Length: 248
Image (cartoon, rainbow, N blue to C red; front, top):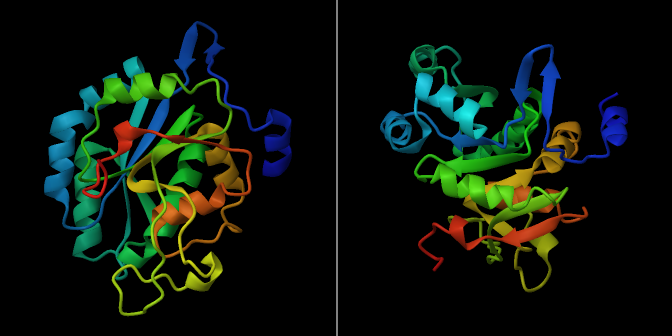
């Protein structure tokens, strides 16, 4: 049924307003998922103060700028322990979380990103969806202006593009269990750096519909890039999204 609807819609992103009687509902420009984890409340509070806002400020950004922002986190392996309770308490105060029904662990990050895009596409019909780390400070107005310039592209993948080395040694920090899939030179395909990247609504719908089929690799940014390799997608190398020490 999802696939039939998607075919009917043509996987296209259309900037529009839905009118029901006298009430007009603006379509969000972007849904931002700030990936966070346990023990990072100071980071979250800093982001709330710096650019995301909270309470009425958060709602105002959604209404006036079309920017929806939520922290994304999983659950503890020991369900309903102190870690889970602390997040639930924080969310009751701030109401700015997407809490995933999966274990919060470093090795689960690629699956966490996939689930965020899928659930966000199910909940919000936005033009774009962004993944951001919880140590990245976003200039909302600049982001809005950048994304607005790409509204004419039906399937777009925007980020600080790179091609890193694939490490086959199990002892290495960035070990890739599927290293053999990347050829003799062992270099990843072009993909957006994991600190921040944006995909269009059509690609988020694709992830949502095919979530059970899309495989993940050792890293979330490589995994996301792999999902779009075989699709008719416009890759945009956006220097404004470069925030790593390795980039200029």
